[in-house]
Length: 517
Ligand code: ADP
Ligand code: ZN
Ligand code: MG
Image 1 (tube, rainbow, N blue to C red):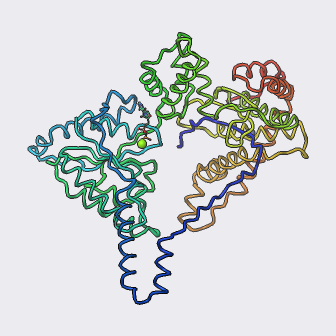
Image 2 (cartoon, rainbow, N blue to C red; image 1 turned 180 degrees about the vertical axis):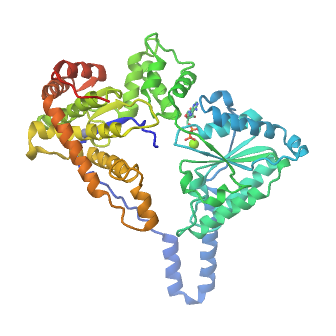
């Protein structure tokens, strides 16, 4: 079962179209053109010209191998250790065994133990994979050689492979060390479809270098990727990256410990509650938490009254998730529609999913072309029941439903496009993967794959979405007073904290409330 803990932002798109600007850079190659002319005119000098071309290409190749490519050796200047990593207990535990090995590989030789040659850290960006690898080197007091997988991918055949060999040569000279290859998916993609010669050679070079180590060398290769599913399975075989460590997004308690770690040395005022901030930051990575605290510190430094206060953190929070609040550019009528649309989401969410705390309703632009947004912080739970998913679909459809209720059919806007897409995706998951309608024991998706029959289920999805839309429209019609009240408050304030919005909604609900989740 998927974890449904992503922060829910329902947004209104002002513009359905975004223009992509394509810029073409033309390279003229005076040298080559000059050579061409010479070949044409002075045929007798062909041999000399060929020689010139050859040496020109060789220079280019040499330049490509040297420039813009550096093995960075860190760890000596600013060593970092396991105490710089908060949360991630499991990963730290796995790595602490490797630290002992790096410190004293001979011991492991004496006992005939074989250490893993390669460790793969996988998980979303910003979760501390690079940090963990550096911390391992720092803890063991050995050099840290870092390279990115994309450094190995070059258009000149052979460059990537020779870089791999150069890296390992350098590492061998250093003796015990940690080699870190970031974004290994760039060089280790599945080899089934049209992978270039170059990539193949690079990967083979890496695999053969790795099998050249033995336990006494004290070398550990750590690779990181956000996309373990895209890796060539050859990389994961025994003797290669056979130890795989998941580095996931932090849960609530882990977020608190990351926030505590990064707020060291930052003067927080007494009104700041890191517990509350940790509860609010569902689905934030360690890097985004660190960034949030830094944004708040920057704002406080600019004001310069001695401390970081709650407001700094709240503003940094909204900036991190929604992009900075910008001046509203919508017309009066557009603002009206946006306010009604967002109020629809907010009222439906309050009635159908009160366990998801509404953090903010806004009709200010939020970046990515979104004209307004509802920010909902879902309760963290691993299992999600059918009724929760149905409610979720209704909340997503509520923006469009409110627009239609208040402005009629003719005024439908493009603002609901991403809401509709997400509601449809959710409906499709329920119907085709979770067996929540008709056949409770069948995954239509798996069946379609296995038996080559069409997947089917589209009709059931439409029926489900239609029913959800009818239900939420009825619900909103019954509480139209709350939508009106919230929409006018939004037009005045432009942006409301969830609690304030919740009070306005509660004050204007009709007497009867539906069964809520
Ligand atoms: P990744 O390599 O997984 O993309 P990084 O290691 O580059 O992530 O993390 C970026 C920054 O985020 C780190 O330098 C650190 O400041 C912060 N960070 C991420 N995860 C953690 C964590 N578990 N504990 C402390 N800081 C973290
Ligand atoms: Zn919406
Ligand atoms: Mg990284």
